[in-house]
Image (tube, rainbow, N blue to C red; front, side):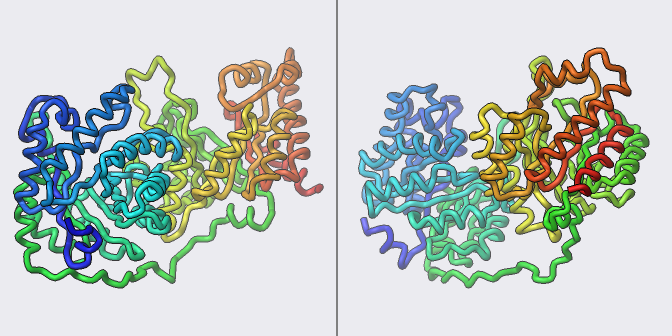
Length: 590
């Protein structure tokens, strides 16, 4: 066949439609379409033929979901299925259509681990002579650039496409904004085409692709046939084929070079799309216009301003109510503000126990008390949609700071009743909010993160902190500093990180309190000699010890931190008022 790059000079390349959803329409065998490569190869070949006869000039191997986890670690079965998928596609295509290796997402954690898994598949494709590759339905770039570089090393004339799955708002399930994903691909220099597939229908996809900058790469689009509905426990796509073909015309008007269909599309969709494309000239890509406002109404972030000016702000953490009675919390917040704190932080369901929502409470404090607020947001309890909605509301209500944390795990005894979400970790969550800062928020949020100075493997904690900073975190709040080891780790952080640090201080109020934190609270390290200080001490004596220890720590870490993070224990607000004044004196006397 003609070299694919030569073909694209004069033609829009028409891909096939969906394999998985069309396979499900034709059969009810329940084995999954990839296993059908070896269980029912004639059916898979028949589907390929239907798409080619409908007008497709490119088809995908039936290998979307062939990660090793699908085969329970059986590499031989994995290879058998992939090889069969390649052979079936080649037999169907012959000289009628280009064959692309279809590589779906592999969720393995790190960029390097993802690459190692992709490499196994890539080697099989290359051994079979495949030269065209599609990395599709991706929610991040994990492993992709390394994989493309590897392919180009082995086959310099390979044609490689990267395609991302994003919602109509432009964000992937991992919280990445599509323009940022495109930029990583276009800047890598090893891809030939970039685009979108799945999740969105043609109408929304056209809006997303309207002003993208592909920097010379071909633009790819495979939208779904509308949006799915569930009837009788089965998923259906209700978009009519002629409507789909008409909607694709809007995408072609943008100068898209490669089109096809994803979930819900059938040979009928491709046939009508082929007819609508017939005789039409290739549209040139339009110049990209920047619509970023140059006159943003950015609020003054008083907390960030004090950090930037080196004024050592004081943050105080209060736990939100466990019920609907908000009066005491608001009274305590007033006292904390009057004592001289600069910002109040509100934990998000600490130790995985439900409390009043930190963001909603932050909005109330910010607007009724004119007190700066820092709600914590965990990745444990909300998916990307819920997180985005809450952030939009909080930002609109004047909340300018947020602290992102992964979140404490659900206790084992409750896991049958309460499900964790964890669509993000704290690094990805920070990146998600940073993209909202760049593209949505008129007044950007100051993104904060956590730093565990009590970690036994602090080098790993430092690496994580660097990743947080790279993804938009501007301030790190440390776990409570109570030991020499914590101070040494804090020194290491100061020497190695170019980021603002809020030093954590927690006043221990009794022997029982000390033993509880020592045994049951993750991230706090308390030595036996600290516990011994409180043995036999009454409330007043214990609080004096707490103030004395906290003052000593505040003095010792003064040069290592940019501010102080004071954590309220057992709702002892009167003690916190004294501690705020104590820490302010430490700062005044330096």
